[in-house]
Image (cartoon, rainbow, N blue to C red; front, side, top):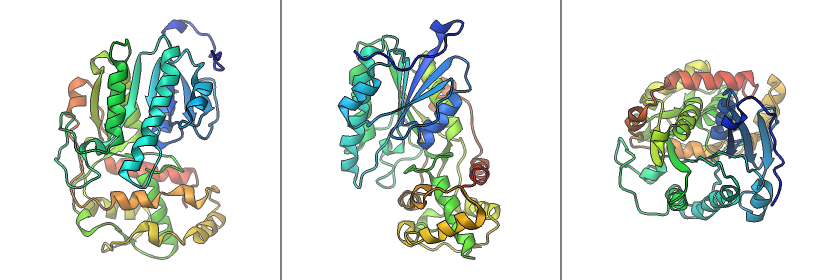
Length: 364
């Protein structure tokens, strides 16, 4: 058996410390989860991703190909100190059916590598989403609740949860399934970061002297939806993983307020000092495909951080979200009933993220 390559500085009450293995450490969810865990006095963190991060005294990173079972066993098979696994990895594929094999395999590979050699494993947290309710397929029952009946497969979130439920039977560790709405936070090169899509779209519109037009389906502009702040999600995820009342439960986690794009869009435009023009349905994946030279010129003109154009925004994800011409929200009362009472104002969340992008020189 491989000896652990990660040892943490001994401290008082070391036996009470928890060791988190955050899988998907560079995504918008994993990155913010690590940032939160690093502020807590009784946690050490190991981040797992395809791209390594900068290690600190409390956070170590390991680069793993999660689709490679042998690589998982080699890189993760010595992490005997792990007490909590936070799984937030995701790989995109063209169709719903094609999403299932790789995303299920990655979770299975992690659990099979770590669970047998981590005697103090207490909890496995699985990050899901409203796809569990069929939200990606079309109009669904709102508000969605954790007790809602499942929908026709394929759906990798459901398959992952079934795997965990079966694996957990007879074990001392527990699981939780966390279901956020669209997550807002900082992360680049991430396939599901709506705030980055909006920020870059607005920056390019301003550079071209254009007003900010909502690019989605006509019916999407006035439907109800919600967001989940990445910081709020991190706090809720750790809460569910450490409160014994939450063992083997699923929780919707959202900001706690609802909005419509027809109200939010002018506020976003005002932040970027842009006028708002009537919505115009267009595929961002198509109309933004030729904008890389413009983006590179903006990097030079404004002294922006040299992030490649392909990493700053996922236009296909923007098209997906802006296509929702039906209500998109879930009931978050179960988490409140179990003891999690935090909320975030969504307008403030968007503006804070945009300010963060400016501070990091991602946008002008």
